[in-house]
Image 1 (cartoon, one colour):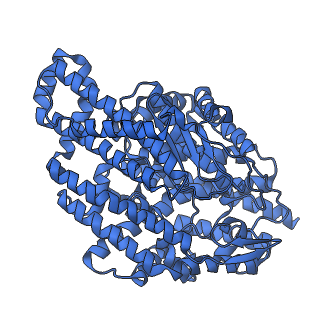
Image 2: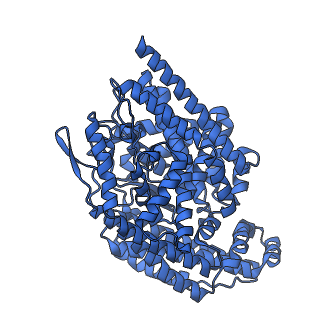
Image 3: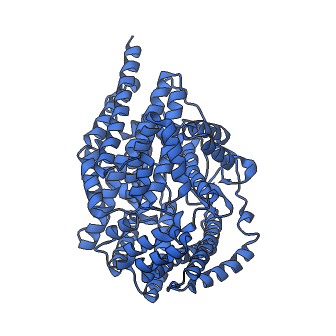
Length: 628
């Protein structure tokens, strides 16, 4: 299981391009940095030779655990060593492949490595499961050090009903994994070949997709509208290709899920992430009942835009229009580093120092380009035992707030990896539920927006950054609910034969978005939103992670403000210890008590409501001052 990270977006389907996304007319950074890949392997040839050996060793690992305590400990330590070594190869190959989308050799080798890691974990789990709880407990009495593997056994027992015989599992992986990887590549290639228009903006010609954030802030309303419409038109022009790619992914995942004794693909993926489809459905329903919170915010925001810009009929393409007279700061990569470190102060000096080390160019732990070129995969972190974690950013520029958010988000994943590595966490416990990983990184985003808000003296700028914070929270909770509902519905509809083409996907998307937002009622282009959801193609059914991550991050953000000292200590311990227990136990250690899903949803929405009211008050104050 690879850790995937959020692709930064905005509230209304990544299309409205709200102000959290940018600093108008900011220059593109010229800074470039490269991670020192020789820390992983001296040369590609050495890596390839060692990978072959590790893959053979992993494949030969016995699926039967020794019944002698000493031999069992040796077996598990050997498996840990192999997993750690494979993580090193996985990081190295992912880095190299991400530097060049055409590098299929490293990408394919990375896929094989990821499959081997998953198989190894499954093999050890099957071995412990076959040994049994009673025999394992007896071995622990003889060798107490074995107790650290107890959660491995618990996970194995949980997944046992869905295990396939080894030969069948290997065949399934060999067929399904490359097919999934090829589907993602095909989607990326389709996006890159989609005919998106170029529009004149000032003295430059801008691409309506690549430069969408800048075009959305153009002072000419006709340009903003044309850019908004042209971006939708681009996706619509390849709609059936996008649809057929998605249908292939859905059918394959559904078939794999049923072969592994799950009722459907969503149930399988949720199970792997310590979620349950019934619980997810209840959370989605509970959030949809509060959708008026988002609609009212959009109406309030629209009224403010109308007041300051003199637009009587505010539309989605007006949402990123800078407030007249607002001088928004522009952040270079170096300035971004400084703001990130200041924003993270509430998490403690040790956490900030780790981040400083990560972002220091002299340490060669950043891989950042000024232009994407052939680079891909947006942003991510890499790391392996014994190697300092690293941060990859496809391209930094043109200095938008979204660029800094990538740094603080993906950097958060890198620091989490580093803390676990320094604490000697077993590689079996460095990978946990994705939504918990994402929550830690999203908390960093919230802290960034709040820091910029609190540090601003200009009332207009304070409103700007408060909007950014609210937009981010609303995106994580409400947009994630929209996306999770959409993806579940796509799977159910395709399998049942109700969804057969792009038009069906358009209708489904529009019906869902209308429940949450004010714009789809008048702008049918929102029906194409499904084609922009790249994670449905890259990491199917991952989107629901951001719903739970957003709720958890919002709850943590509230605690950072209310109980800073206590939270800081418990949070540091949580990050260092890894995923050695079920999520509910880990969260109990963080919050000091158990939290129900209903409480998490209700608290998250109430925290968001308070921020929205603060923004409404700030709007009124600005409007009153302007009237005077």
